[in-house]
Image (cartoon, rainbow, N blue to C red):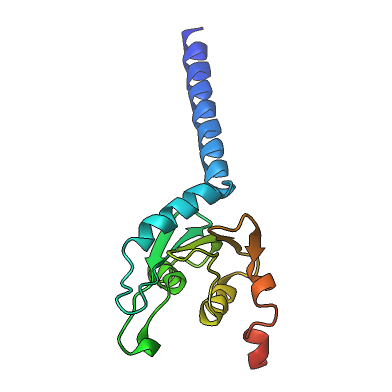
Length: 160
């Protein structure tokens, strides 16, 4: 009888651990996108912007499928062509950490109007996910990259 109780207790513990792991990974993989949290992180990133010439600050927060957030800010250069946007900074940081699966990005700026990604940033966004959700501060709508750049340059364009 004692051995039966020990085995039963052990099995119950294993089952509880199993349920915990299923719940944990289910939440991790199927997390809901928190627009407000992403915008808050983008606003924090905006504070680090180097916008010495235009005085126009931009911040971005990129969410991976795994639930990690990578932020970026615009970094200007006197030679304007060398300036890099907040969205690409966030993407390049994530990609340099071997992240490739993205679900959402939030963008904010020091301007009074909603600030959408520029053409170069739209192309970078489309490289990784055609259905990535885009949250733009001061605009309640959720966008998809396929709406902002319906005819992106893709692998099909290369004939592959």
